[in-house]
Image (cartoon, rainbow, N blue to C red; front, side, top):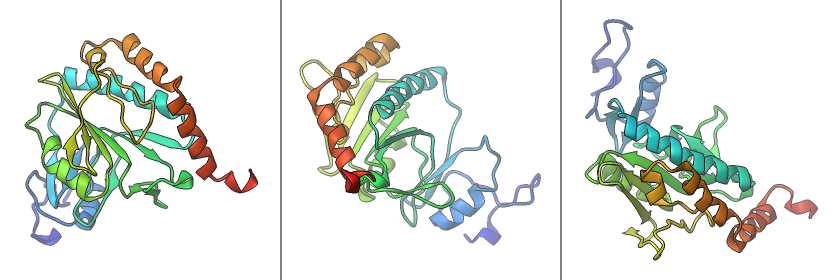
Length: 235
């Protein structure tokens, strides 16, 4: 279906987006940019998914995990965290992940920031808060993210109270250590305590992260980023 033949909104006179529509990223982006600011939709594998209303538990879990990502970014120069930001992945993919962490391009990251302030290319790590393990996030999105080069993927299944850690490069779920802490490889010292996350224990969640940030692995990662960064020629 071309843009000209798509359903037109009586209120705006412009094409609308509906779940299940098939289109290219270019067409999706053009229509989406005309939608109201509170409208949210994603393009995954050429298919449009319009967001449903979110329940309180989803928002609460998202907020807590966002705090971890923000604190990690603050302690790790060269890393960029973001929340609900559009990512331009390919000709048929324009997701809006709940959270991502990426290495900034100037520090050797695999994505870039476009002139109009979008992220183009795959962030190294993406996290999604999902209703359950049967959701879009663990199926269509998982395949799309893997295909376009996302290295690690965290899916928080709220209903089952389970945090899945996926190595997308190897296409497999990672087992947790005996203490139950998730320790992504792409971002050393990003230590996440799923039990604390699901019981809404902010203090315990941040305590696990701070232990990671105090580890030798984090210090070494910061050194590597600095060596790859824009100031390397002067060092």
